[in-house]
Amino acid sequence: MGLIQEFPIATAFNLANFLPVEKDTAVAKTIFHRDNDLTIYIRALDAGETFGTHTVNFEAIVQVLEGSATITVNDFANIVKAGEAIVIPEGATHSVVAITAAKLYVTAVYPTAKA
Image (spheres, helix red, strand yellow):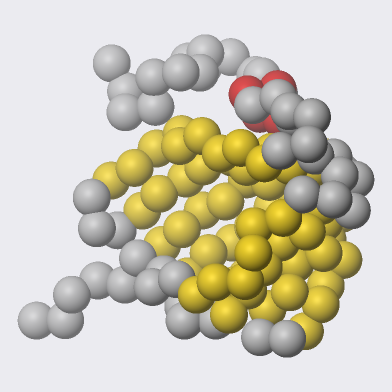
């Protein structure tokens, strides 16, 4: 059995169908987490919903699966649409506001300890 257990194995599927958008809310579900180095999750936001301004201790690539969102990184606003992605550097201040109902695929890569 693989580490990613909630998906069909060796069969194509639509990742955007994994987490539905809920009316007037933002939700997230972890797909995969490996201690101290990698987390993959999906966020689903209804239009107008937000993940407020914050800073994290990892690098992330955010891919928009459906819809569109304004993703602000270090005070620079980017409109990111389905099929596009943005990299958020470690320590960057950032936020997400859904322009339309949106689903985001987030890969968070944590820094490794230096020997």
